Image (cartoon, rainbow, N blue to C red; front, side, top):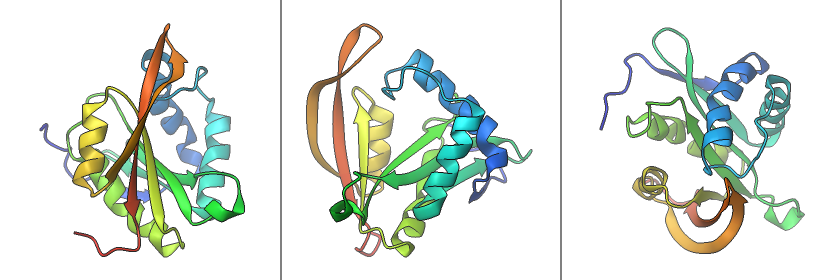
Amino acid sequence: MNAMPALHTVRDATAADAAACADIYAPYVTDTAATFELQAPTAEEMAVRIAAARSRHAWLVLEDAGGTVAGYAYGGAFRARAAYDRCCEVSVYLRRGLRRTGAGRTLYTALLPRLAERGMTRAIACMTLPNDASLGLHRALGFTDVGVMHKVGFKHGAWHDVAWAELDLTAPPA
């Protein structure tokens, strides 16, 4: 595991963080199948996403010692129907080079209790396969594997599977 940059701070994201979040996310869109988006969102679109997530769930950023946004994590609606209102889907994205440094764990450790405080009872994670780093992070945080959907996303000329995992936010942390 690489060393986490010293003096990192987790805080609520604001619209002022939208450009940094868009910059972090863009390579995931353009260079990987980690997300099934085909066009990277603009800073303006990212600001809308931040505001939407913060209205009911949460969006957090991780700053390095220099105040640069190094990653972000958020919770959002799992599904639109009212019966799902207490479930949320969670995601974490990090600047290149920060995977397996503890940065994702730092963000989720702050995010998950915040979602529970806001009435969420279950966090759902969806991960494009293969993705050992994301699977490992979610399992280490107590997420339980739910299943795999095969060949559900077509990106970069290939079909991709996705794994689903869930975490009970009402249970005391392990």
